[in-house]
Amino acid sequence: MSVGSTTERLERLTTLDASVAGPSEVAGGLADIRMLRGWLDAREIDLARRQTELSETDGAAPTADVLGRAGRTTRRKAEQIAARASALSAAPTLSDGLANGTISADHADAFASVTGRADDSIRIGLLDVEAEIAADAISRTPEQFRRRLKERARILADDDGVERSEQQRDEARIHMDIDESSGMGEIRGELHPDDYQKVKRRIDAEVAAIKHDPRYRNLRRDQLQAVALVSLVTGQRATSRTPAEVIIHIGLDSINGTPGAPKFGEYLDGSPIPVETIRRHACDADIIPAVLNGDGMPLDVGRAQRLATKEQRHALRSMHRTCSVGDCNTAFDRCEIHHSLEWTAHQGPTDLKYLFPVCSHHHHRLHEGRWRAQLDPSTRELTVTYPDGTLHSRSRPDLLTNAPAA
Image (cartoon, rainbow, N blue to C red; front, side, top):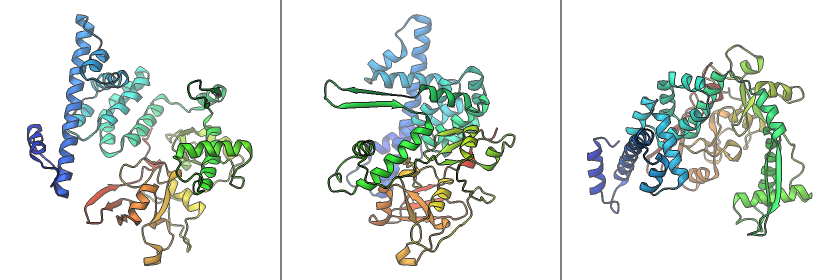
């Protein structure tokens, strides 16, 4: 790990010859860049705060205007920096983390976004536990950190989400028009989360069915989704009828109404859903229990077959929101299931303790790229190394049971 003062890091980077650097030198250089970038972000925030003071007391130009002109950045980016500076002015631990490189600007922006939309009482409640929030930021990816922060805000608001859910149902709408510049038909809309999950599941199934068709092999995913939508609407779908399921994960304490339990579960893609809405679904739903051990890990329900069963995929989703590798944020429902014990080489059984989700990119790296992955069955910590043994990442799943307590 690169250590030293800001000056020492800058000197190392200045003298580093990237064209002949070895693996350790590349890793050290990138670590120095990360630390320097954090320091620069922190200094930018200090200057943004000062500009705000000058604007409020001396009539100087607005902060976002100065950031845009002097920093030669977009208006949107300038406003983001100004919001970051405002939010971190009351969060010294997060500010220090940004300055020393233990958290990133993306973590700071997540904090600014959540606190900026919260009312005063919730904002004060979050700042009261700022040290805990900073520890969350250090140990999680920006997206995981954002989810945790939103959950904390919901708990402080004592919000069960029911009123908002009904409001979302009334606000659902679709707009259809022709773009005059391109001549293409446009469809834009906002759907209630339940309806969105049903539509998304149908489209994803259709994409899976057509993506290997030679006619569509070179299309991007968004283009495949357009083809899939048209196929489904016009009745020309390639799939057999896929159930319009709404798949939900929730802890037993939550659905039983245990005091202090989280008041939200999650859709398959990690979006929150109120407990009361889940109870409504449960009236006519298939309920698949996943029995957890003391560490919150689903117990083994091994199968002597090659592919993970539907039930095993559900159990894996209760442990993993995203791809297991490092900080990859590819959603679980777009991942493939990898066997940590190769079926052909080791006759590896298809047990949960050997399975974990990976995106297509990382799945190729683990097979054709000869990367190596070691899964700890008790903690599900995944250690990934490159073919030469160099460490790529260590990561643990973002468990539903890790949500902040009330």
